[in-house]
Image (cartoon, rainbow, N blue to C red; front, side):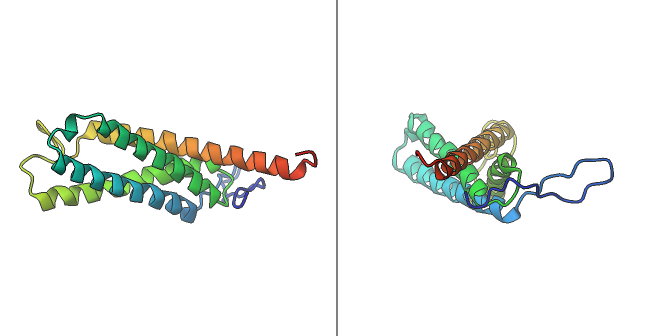
Length: 168
């Protein structure tokens, strides 16, 4: 598999401590872009559908859209590992997806400011950016990114084994 290495790639560590694996910023950024674009597209679709259908917020379609976002997080973890020269492939996936969620927060704040909504940003009855769901989304993003990273490593292992197996 391109990018996943088995040789140690590490930074200089203080004497007596093991070297820490490096995470490729480019690989994490690639995965973050995949997830961020998907989040923007899903948020746009949700906004359009909520405007067109007054009962949309009470429908099961919200769960479907959220599953699309979770699928995008898995894909982002996959992409990050496929582009990563690091020896820490299961770390780069969650880093990519959490970076995408963190990048979405200022965009959501700007949307709140542009809409001039008559609700608070973080607290109150119906906040624009409630803390609980943000934290849950960060956890789900990290877990889905790790799943995508694990999946990419498993696929690379199977591809490598098949390439070296004359029977396969």
